[in-house]
Length: 222
Image (cartoon, rainbow, N blue to C red; front, side, top):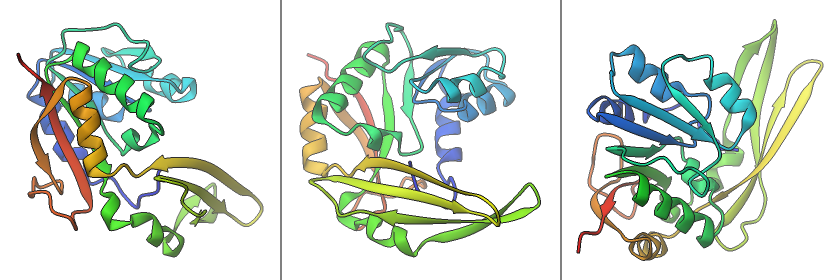
């Protein structure tokens, strides 16, 4: 569950992928990013990993890319120039243990790791109940709106409701809004360091009111 009204990170990540010889997409979903890179002429190794078998089944329609089930605690692939985690998928890591397992996994696998999380200071989840949009599906107009339950610690419970004339669907999920200070502690504990940090997709400097917390990490060298 990941509320948004559109993906504004596509160009940011696509440029990074196209500039790297080998790329690991962590939480690749349906494989959109890597398939776009291949279509744009990427000739190197592209590997996507995702724990959701339904998502991975959709990704596998794209040829010329390796698709692996699991997450960074199970994937043993190494030697990548770049690893990415897009679409706020990092916020699905709900515990420190989950975060550390992922960070340590990408440290073993790749020379750089780029990901984003929503800036917790902005408290974006408080605006989600006011968000709604409509789309056409099988001749009907469906409306999407969100319910947010009281936050517990730094984890938000959110329900995405989709309502049409004769059907309704509700998908519940959880997202973690990790404080910057705690994130940086976990990054250091995993043996990584911050190469760059941005607050927006045009590489704006990060500030307390930035909507995004975009981190470019590399392994600590002794």
